[in-house]
Length: 589
Image (cartoon, rainbow, N blue to C red; front, side, top):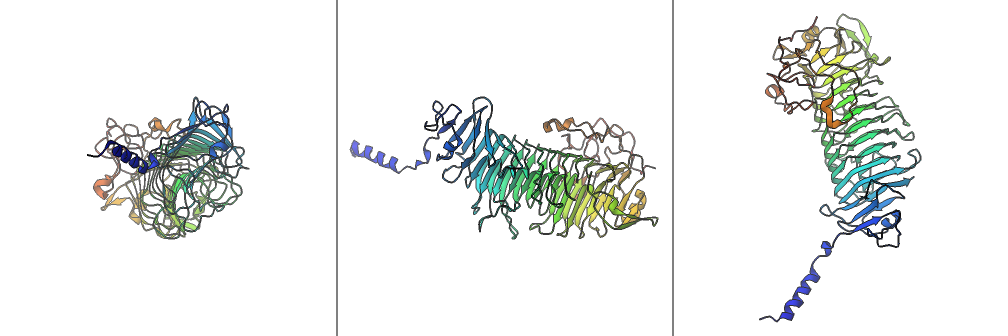
């Protein structure tokens, strides 16, 4: 029998060998009533952000700033501290309201080479975006040899910073002022940015990116969500020429969601005339979904962009759905490739969106086109499309599905937007455009498909020009009636039968520029409802049955589809009670 003292000694020895990672987490408090010589407890808090920077934090620790008060300075959390996804370090507020971090001309909160971090319930403000040289919140993996895990940013307001209100990722190659270390490639995994606002910044509102790689394969970031965020008045940097003034951008990301976000009044100031901003977009990414968002009144001081939504160069397997774009300088919904894209632009979907009065500024296309009666006109009289698919000196766009969208393109001064535009370079492949409602005010073409675009197919769409004549520019020829376009090109036919229609859609109302107070109430949008008796009800093609396409389960308003005996055309699915009384699939006179 072992003696009792040996049992006790063995127990102490085992305890000495036990890892120290189970140490109890500590809350550190910072108050305007505190003193930096205090221990940082609730009763004896610290006073300054510099005292926080001097601390070494451990998993589960929290730094809490007193709500309703302002703290001058810049917070830095780096590899001197340690955290993990199960025990993250938290930076937030306590008591009533949110604390304010007044960052002056620098970065408000810098998290460097550290995963497992929560930033919540704060206001972060710079002095002046035109003079500031930092970020509002910068979460940076500068070593970038592997992704760091778990970042949460919730309920923060970030304003008046030069580069971005919120940045997460590796060293951002898109910002030419920053150079990654040799071998650096990765940023973060499992990132959530939610219930936050970024405004009055210069370069970008919310930005996720990393070091650019010329080698195909792999992405800097993985599994990123931006939800319930508002970005506005990102003016653009007058000293910076590349994509300055964006609202929300996911770049170099595999697996991303932008959900229930609003982006408006971004862009308008920049140093160059190319590569303008977009309200909400993704670039060089895979498996991105942008949904239930509103993007409007975005501007570009250059010759391009300033649009609502975009899946840009090297984006694949991605979806833009249930979004509302209106009154932007540029294109409402863009799917576009560029020359140096490392990844293919392929297998993307644009469905159940509304674009209204977009394309207010930019022209696109050039050269002469001729009508089917022989008259020659110039295509550069028309603006870029409200929905646009194409490429600029890059690889062709491949397998892009555009269906059940509602488009209204109207003239703005001497600017005449197009409904749907396909082109820009080489022959794009597998571009299918089906079940869309495309409308203009009769000034611009319903459709422009440039010369050589043999890989585009229009089927089952409804067209209307508010009582004006039909106009399509296809392959360099203008067509002024649907029947001739169909007969001479084979468009709007299916298995030898005529599909598509040119007819008054009978809508509740349109073109009023409704701006939603809350995107949680997207169903409150009152325009573009199909009225009882509309010829578009039950007139859509069954995309799953005929083409094997999974069209989703609902329309833009959240109504399950289909409601009647078949699918409707456009973004609105009429309730089952609004059944057509007469079949109207013929072309209107």
